[in-house]
Amino acid sequence: MSALLELDKISVKLRATHALNGVSLRVQRGEIIALLGPNGAGKTTLMRAALGLIPAAGARALGGADPAKLTNRERALRVAYLPQRPQSIWPISVEALVALGRFAHGAAPDRLGAEDQEAVDAAIEACGLNTLRARGMDEISGGEKARAHLARALAQHAPLLMLDEPSAGLDPAQALAVAEILRAHAAKNGAVVFSTHDIGLAASVARRVVLMHEGRVLTEGEPEKALTRDALEAAYGRPGRLERIGESYVALFR
Image (cartoon, rainbow, N blue to C red):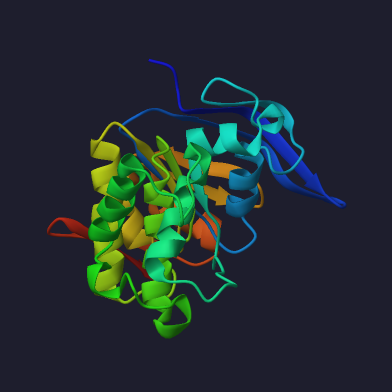
């Protein structure tokens, strides 16, 4: 089975700094992969390089094609990208924002076909936004805005989701709801790559974690095997450990 994303020894230099240094990653359908590491570790740069949004050395393939050579539409049919703190600068409704995810399919909020409307409705339902669909984006909370942008990404119907800190600013219940959405997407033969500072959430949701530090991968693998005491201290500069509590995990530092 061909990979949805393949990165081979990707390096990125920003000004005089090596933001990424020889990072490799392969993403298959059905996978959820979490990118971990402190601020400045290279998580966002890795996503942007994978999408072809910034120049990079090394080999990269998004759905079998060089992402830097794809048109915006071709890229959007392969991957839905949600950056950190996405903005909606227009006073549009939640439903209209979610419908923007259908642009790659030739639709728009004012011209949705039956298939497009079905995709929008399903994304709104998945993100628990039915009671807010007619509300303006300027009338809802920050957490609700985050879920609306996630719904827009889901409506895009791309096999790969790349989400940069999708749980940032969410309360625990909302973060758990996002985790269920990610699991559901992977279960439908899609894949998810997301970055987060919530180590416990990453270990609870992801089949594989990639722990980064200063543009390099420190460890990669199943959470309990990759997030060792030594690895956590090397990444964050403080002694830490991963603890399992039932079906969930928590990271403890001192």
